[in-house]
Structure formats: structure tokens, C-alpha cells
Length: 350
Image 1: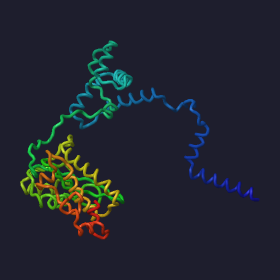
Image 2: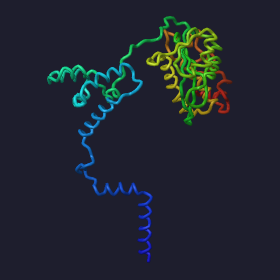
Image 3: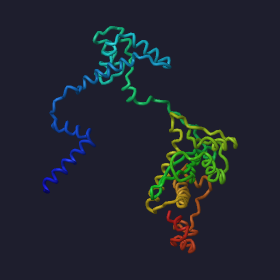
Image 4: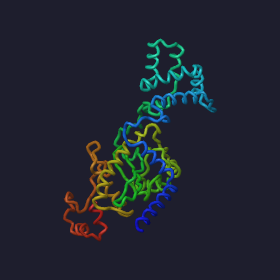
């Protein structure tokens, strides 16, 4: 009885499977009937690579003959000249182009000329368009230009602004405003918000005012990219203070290269610190930003001096630091550094 019962259950399961997974069952049966060897002969409905290429060539020429409204004038003239050749001739030229590894038109012309093809064919090769070559072509070389160089070490004359993203120890993303002086390499990174994407231009303007213009005043020139966070309220705020922001060109993102490299250097120091000290949350990220700012402005060398020396005239005071001969033995500071409940404890560890 148990054997009959198990056979009946298997039969019912097979029947339900064939109904629920009809397509998959048919595919598996076809695969089993073919076998899994590598020397299975091609079936009649499978096309060889040569047949696929020939079909693509014919389809391309058919598409070339279809009139497309609202074409550009240059494209319309190119197609008009190319279509003066018979379809078989166009297909033959495209076949030669494919056979020689999508060779440039100059090489195809040389091949046709050596083979004594009609001059009409040779002259119209330049008007042949290959979609595959356009997709895989390298971007055209463009002239490298840069923003005007800052010859002097004048602070707060020309600054660059960018937004950087960083994650805390729990993987939560945060956006920070990176402000970089091109004259002295002085850098201030201010906290914006928790999240990703483009921050509001009003928020960028408020952070810029509190972290830079509040203590240092307004610059003469501001360099930034074309992001939406640099428009709107931020651009109006700069304009209200007589500053016309200089936007980087769409084709030349390297215009903001110095600011982006400084932001990368800042993140290179901040990321290991975050992972080591398990920094998380808005308040701790704000403390981190302030401390990393102090570190990078004392580490860099600009004309023989650090950015902090260019701006402040001296190195920053760091109470409790062993390298500070004036305050290295301050008992109150040292006790705050080793007290885990003290707000100064985390700041000192960073």
C-alpha cells in the first residue's frame, strides 16, 4: 500500500509541475534530447556567424533607405549621397569594412583602389556610417584648458567649492561641503546632511556662510561645477556680494581638479579614522570634520609653509599634544582626554 501511495503522489506532483512550469519543462526536455556535448551539430533554425553578419548588413541598408524626419542637414546630405549607390554595392562596401576589422574609411579606400573598384564606389566610402564604430569609438581629443592660475599666495582670493560623500562606521552616507583656497591650499570641510544625491542650494549657502565667509570674509572668485546645489540660492547669495561664480566646463571636469584632489586627500585620512574609532552619527561626524580640517591644514606644504601658517601666521594650538611644549603636561586636559564620558575624549582620539 505504501508503494502504491508513493507512486500516486509522485504522479500527481509530476502532473502539477507540468501544468505550473510548462515552458520550463519543455525547455529541459529539449535540452535533454540534445545532450550536453560540445559537438552537437547545428540545427536548421540556427544561423551561422556569417549569416548573422549578412543579415545585419542587409538590415542596416534597409534602415538607411527609410526616410527619417527632422534629421540634421549634414546627416541628410550624407545619406542622400550614400543612397545613390545600388543596395548591393552598399552592402559589398559594408562587408569589406567588416571583414577588415571595421577599418577606417581611409584604409577601405586603399583596398578598393588596389582592387580596381569603380571610382564612384571609392569616392562614396566616406559617406558610409557604421553604428558599431560609433558606439566603440574613443572620445575625441579636446583642448586642455585650465582656470587662470593663482600666482600669489593670497588667502581667500580664489576658492573652489565641491560636495563630497563619505560613510560612517555603520555605512550611513553623509554629504560634506569641501571649500578649498587655491592660493594657500587652506581647506575647510563642513557638514551638510545625512543622505545621498544633491543637497539643497540653500543648505550649501548656509554652510558656506557659517564655515567660510563668517570667519574669513567673502572671496573674490568662486570656482564650482554645474551641479544644481551650486545654483539657485547659492548663486544668488554669491551674486548679492559681487561674486560671479565660475562654472567648470562640461567637457573639462579637470578645471576643479585641485579641489577634488584635496577632497580625496581629506577622505583618505577620514575613512581609516572612521573605521578605527567606529565613528557614527551626525554629532560625531561633525567632530571628525573639524579635526580632519586641522590635520590637513597643518600637514600640507605650500611654498615652504603649511596652509595654517599662511592663514593664521603660526601653527594651531593643540592642548594636551605631546608635541606642544607649552601644554603637554596640562593635567586638566589630560584627564579629559582619558575620560570616556568627556566630549573632549572623542575629539582627542580623532
